[in-house]
Image (cartoon, rainbow, N blue to C red; front, side, top):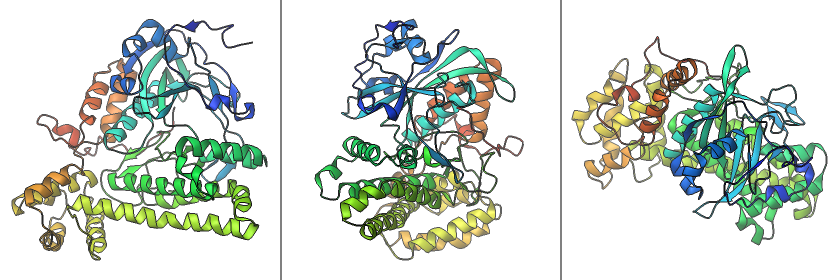
Length: 504
């Protein structure tokens, strides 16, 4: 049965330019989304729609909402569920795949970049196993909030184009309202996609997949002799820089499985993610991460481990490329060894910017580590401590704002003279330095208690105003504005959210 035999085509004119659907049939399962009862648009990302060259008015129309819910298939769309495997908390699963998602197709944005448009929570697929293929409203809105916040913070990420309620319940621990998220990514290729074919011993499929990834994300690798080594180098570099950005913002992904590690270098799959408030390197929020595998401080190690799994999958290609087993293995190790260098460079450069330093000195690392240790001991808020340093950078009268972050302000007083001495070695005015620091250190992040309050209002009361208000604040995370103080304030003890959950 064709997709159009049981599903009317929507006249929406979306300029799909599908390439993944041209790959061999064993890369995916062709299947349309499952219709829902009463779709209703919650949110449409107008700026993202414009970037994609889509007609926002048409998307918000009844026919557009029907497409965003999976009730209609737009002309040119070729819905499919992607196949992939993955290590989940260290345990390998040979077949995962899109169990509740449909890749509708690809479009070329106004920026010339190819983007996937995918529905999450769109019904069962051949990869669903025992799942219902649906998503609850709360997790959908969480991903919308956090992914868009990450974008405005300058972090490579998937984006959220739309959220739609389905008019029908989903059954988890309780009965919850259902929803569908329209996710946009530069692709949905994952480390787990490569693992899927490696587990089958299908070298031809691995080569085809690697060539596709190179063409789509690493075209510079296509013009060199060692193309697969260049591809691996590219993924290692992007992921090292990505994790450094997470660390600089106090972001904890929560579920860094290999199927949640993108080949493009984007943050993908916002489940039990959270932004840390009181600084502690062992912070964990995910309700299922009992051993701290994906704790804040272990994220670089986890990513390096995931990249080693990617290197394993393309080892047959590296062996062929290098002319022998030992040479191929050495090439993989050489590439993986670059992760630490790229990560440390990105992290140290970012930390210097956060402290207002434009030049590099050997002692900068110890200056940073000393501050972080004092923040940990004093339970200082990660985001606000660095933001208030922007005020202190203009003069000692700004010290009071930073001191208030520490349970015992003496901890800051002991560190502050070293920082000022280091600042004095640079040729920047206090005003210029503070302005630069404010472009690096956000004032507004998606604090857990605010996110949970917005989700509770939407889920329990069908009140989406807190969700809208939070999105509006997070759209300008570096611009402090009067009247928005509560969005920058850490949770009170009774508001604190210690656990986050998978959901979409």
